[in-house]
Length: 215
Image 1 (cartoon, rainbow, N blue to C red):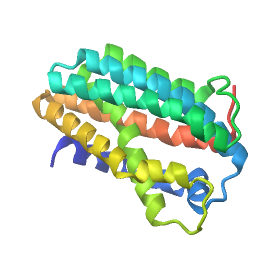
Image 2: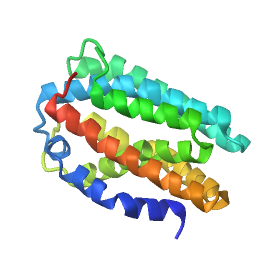
Image 3: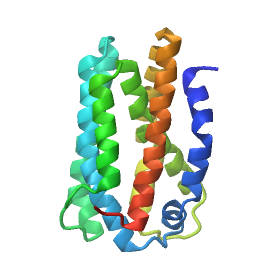
Image 4: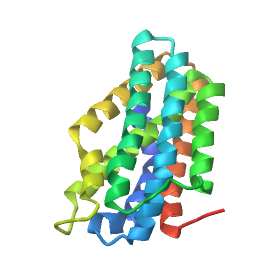
């Protein structure tokens, strides 16, 4: 069993809780309150900017040139998506500005950036993986379990269930497995710890949006 398979088994309870949380079930059913999705979109816009910066940090630190190029592209794509949020999603859902970064987003982006900058590069790579992998899994799950036509959140669902995003996810997983295979046992354990922490922060990010949690 490779590292990614073992890591996913470790976060299976977290992933199950994500699928069952009100934000995701109501998003899937198209019944999520617009106010909660607006809060989420504003925070996600801020998150993606800093996620892109963390990805670029890993690109600068990666030992393998192909990994460096891959993470620089991942970082650029995150910023492109962030711009698309302003141009399209913000308009569609009536969000006029990003506003202040709230606690869950603040915690998550600082964990990612500090890990990407200060921990072993393998650990930083593992910390960034849940944002790819969990979003793809959730997007696929919602896409195949939708219970309503004309879901107001269909564009979001299609983005993360799409094949283009899926290809990026597969590349990110493959890089994690390759660096883990060459890492020490201690480093692999730290990779898993970072992966688990980031997965929990994914849950907290959506929960905070549902609760409209602010400072």
